[in-house]
Image 1: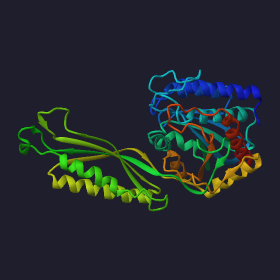
Image 2: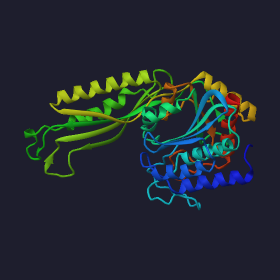
Image 3: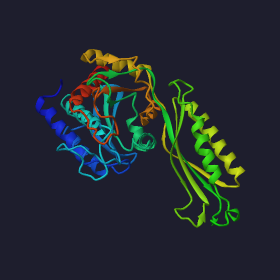
Image 4: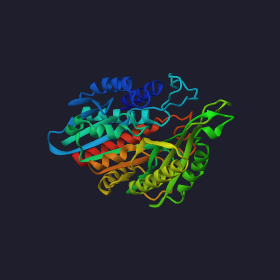
Length: 384
């Protein structure tokens, strides 16, 4: 390990302080300020702040020219109440670091400590703390920010902890690893009437009832191959909570999910066609919008090869043919592949560990040393 036990203890304390003070997507100002203060202690060549919102990046320059390697972690927590009873549990009501982003940040802070002590021989190592991963907005905002132009990497790497897999064991494969997904919001608009004279209004009742089933039926929820699709209705509301008014408006929320971006485009087209057909048949106006838009996450061969070499050099066990991958869950890291080769590996959090987004989840501190070792080895292998 490139850090002492004392330094690792400090990183562990850093992680636990983050865990106590979670901020959700787009609101990570205090988290970013705390990370900035800690990064400054490692004396990077520069820290770029305010990237894509509250994002920030620490840059460590080598002495010679060379490629740029970017390692990414996430700043945001979740709007979920934590139910754990350990001392470092969340102090913020209704919010928690229940996906492990506090641990991912700790891994990058361990890298910062090591890079502060020994710069790469060539090129640049960039530690990117990205905002707003949980709602899918962060990576797109970072890449669109003019400040990112000065940070453009030649390769991007990341990880995610993975409950259900043996502690410290890695899952890594080339190709698709996370699904594309998006939240579809549908508003059907008609006209209210007195409940005793519904014929004088235009109610979206029957269109709503049909769409709940028809949208769900668009997905096959089959094997995770190129034709995989899933539509999950997550919310529906018809009219007002009153007995004297026939409904004039309905809201339907549905999550669309596919393995590939091309399949998502086709699914969106089918869903929109279905909604418009029902709206026209019911003489309804319709509004469709999208939130939480995630592109597919696809691991590039070049980046996977570098991670495999680092895992083997560090003696970390890994599996390239696990039934756990690809995942149905989404990850916005996939957008970094539009800039340069990229790959994410999945670090086992324990076979019986609480699942991600569970109210009793906590990141295992043992993974800080393992994850940072792998990333540091990749940096040294590429940059020297």
